[in-house]
Image 1: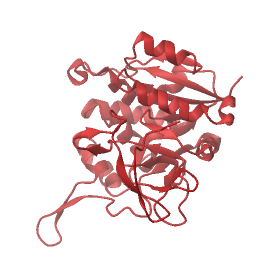
Image 2 (image 1 turned 90 degrees about the vertical axis):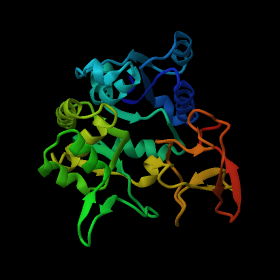
Image 3 (image 1 turned 135 degrees about the horizontal axis):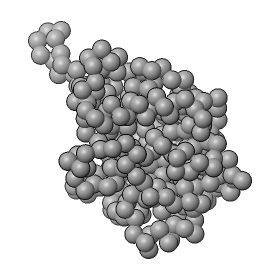
Image 4 (image 1 turned 120 degrees about the vertical axis):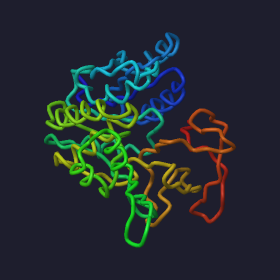
Length: 303
């Protein structure tokens, strides 16, 4: 029986990305010892049939916390903002859960091992979106002299979600945590903290981003025990482009010592001519190489 599981979610539009994520996992021999499960948020029967030959389980995502229809507006894929906080309910047979957004793919298995190790003893394994080369960590609007309006992602979302100013201030300049890749043990107390905060953020704010704000609250306000992993374990391309190592045919961090990218995450998309690389695999951009040249490449997974 497999003890560890990787879980993702998609609707029919993001199925190609989900399929690429699964293929990027299964090319590693180590994946034979890890289950792969999928939450269905609007896949077609044909897509689910194709996935069934590759994954261990497929379950329909639900609204595990009641959300008004006026907020959903038919966007069933937004279940991802709720259901990922209840993974053990959907897939109860496993001991450790690693969530990876479907617009990400695995470039180095070492990151998978790190995430499963990171969540030992009930800890949350996750990556902060801050590292070498990040030039802006929080936005502010300067008014007069020393006066400014805080525009950081955590603070802005907290205020919009009717979180108290005392809590919002604690989040204001904390390094933002992206929830697109994380790991937790089945019996971790972090689940309850996250779910309680999620009920609060869903009640007061928009659905999109609610689960991310809730997890930031769990880490920075509830102080759940957290193992922070290196940036290459969840490399968000829209924040900082990687470089390409031609000699080894792989993506790496753009600064010395140019660690290999572990999980490539296309969160927020990579846009060219008003087209998103997540929805159009033909989109390619110029990437610097370690060898001092430029190559035109897609950042999506390619066998």
